[in-house]
Amino acid sequence: MAKDALSTVKKLAVSPQAGKTGTALLAGAAVLAATALWNRAQTRRAERDHPPTGRFLEIDGIRLHYLEQGSGPPVVLLHGNVVTAEDYLLSGVFDQLVERGHRVVAIDRPGFGYSDRPQGMLWTPAVQAHLLRRAFARLGLERPVVVGHSWGTMVALVMALDHPDAVGGLVLLSGYYKPTARLDVPAVALAAVPVLGDVLRYTVSPLFGRVMLPLNLKIMFAPEPVPDHFRHGFPYGFPVRPGQIRAEAQDAASMVPAAAALRARYSELRLPVTIMAGIEDKIVDVDDHAVWFHDAIPGSELHLVPDTGHMFHYAVPERVVAAITATVKRRQTTESDATSPPSVAELGSRPAA
Image 1: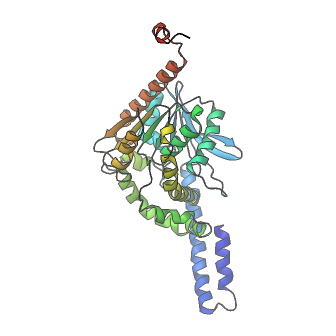
Image 2: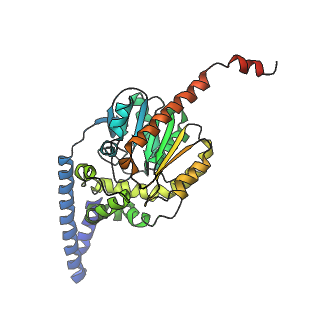
Image 3: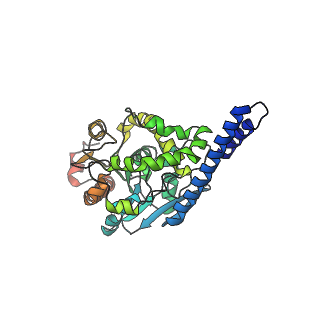
């Protein structure tokens, strides 16, 4: 699509009526074309320097990349925006869960990392949840506890609501749970606009993203500094690839309406829910979201982590793992109680037929 848009500019530039305007357009088109080629080369370099480390699963022609290790009660990890499934490796959550005796699966959401995100449809949380539900079935994941971070919490919630048979419990980290003003959305979402967005994400957006990424990461990790192991292990070229920019922009554009639709359904949740957030989160207000959501979900557990922000799972991975393990146990207890025969005392307390 970017090639088509650039081609249109070139045609206008060389038309007989164009004159000086055409010359300027032609010069602009040449700059955009050169920028697009440079960005394409940078994408190839980023992927060459950071090849896929997991496995691939194909569903209806859509290829998903995922990491899997360990055995035991299953846990599925869904990442947020900007990052990929490797976020849970870098934070230490993945390996600690494996050590605690879990089968752990971390999935690159569509358009992130090495997972496909075909054009022609809006990849809302519901669409992503439906695809991942089928991935669960293919991988033989029976009612795993699903962990979602940031934007990934919405996919986890939709899975629990639309496919309650597929999810045994939820652990939600730094989640966005109801529609609130987001000043960052309009600028980011511009890259999701058809044609214009295609031109931007192949030309200007990657350059702008490279400049802004260090600041964005600083805000994400605040008040903690960006950890050294993140700075050295994170593939900085991935979030500014044209394909992932489209995924990030679409996710940003759909975030507020998705949260509005979810808000009306929270009362339907019938499974163990654990909510965690860093008290100093600069991305999502803790009182407006984590605390509010906890109050809206009877029986949910809330863990607020002091002196940490949006990426608190890097500061206290052991606390996150402990919360996940506890949720797995709650799930097992809940399902055991549901399938156990009534006790003698319960039978005796029932009225005679």
